Length: 156
Length: 156
DNA sequence: TATTGTTATACTCTATAACTATA
DNA sequence: TATAGTTATAGAGTATAACAATA
Image 1 (cartoon, rainbow over the protein chains, first blue to last red):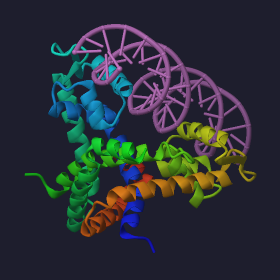
Image 2 (tube, protein in one colour):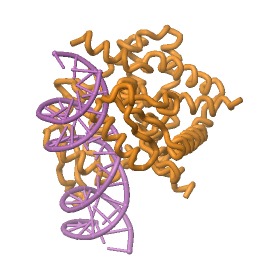
Image 3 (cartoon, each protein chain N blue to C red):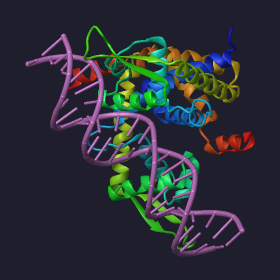
């Protein structure tokens, strides 16, 4: 007999990767946007935090600076993001969405949301509400990377 | 005003990647197992379907044969999986876990589940139940890759 | 000396295209 | 001819280590 929490963890561990796979497959191959999930997340972050530095994003997303730096190369090359020096601290760079970047982000968001919605329509209204509320609860727990880092630091 | 389904899709789209990131980070760096999420999923599948062919797994997981073939190279090299010819159809191969593979899979499962459980312990009992039930509902929708393929075929 | 970012290197994941062997 | 699998090639995501520039 497992505890409710352990059973919950078990379910999350098995089901989240399945859902993630569907999201990834859907996101890739949106003719207009064609973004990877990490790229998409970066664009969403920049949409809400224009002018963020690389470190800001890395900390928020839990990625290393080299990983992000390389990802940005791709986004800058595709003209979805601009990378400019920060005059106040010349070690830093300032990242922002271009109009194309904003368009791509919104297209990816809308397209993926719509496609997900089509599949989620199979849920009963009660289950739909339950899933929505569950996501809100999980966001509280998994939303902040700082917490993860703090945990790992404490553990080590 | 968005529909409940659209709101649900929105939440799933934002939160699932966060949870996935935590799972990936946790899975990597388990000293014993050190598996990627896709590797982990393959091992789980083989644990439940010993002797499966490459095509079986590819269809279940929604991956192409070359992708899986290469993944198997790594698992076979690490002695977690055996790859043997199928005597009844010599085009096919028969994949199975080695004892090490089973051990690694179980270690990764237990370790990740425990770590997830520690974070999920922050949920109220009601939310914990809600999440568990939501995962069951989502598994119904996203569990089978065949459905996705059928959908894509129908769409095209 | 500490921080920000980049470059170099290496691995995994994933795909498409071209190929081999078998049915 | 169709199916199962591999090899070749390519690109993204990720990490660590080493480095440059700035604070």
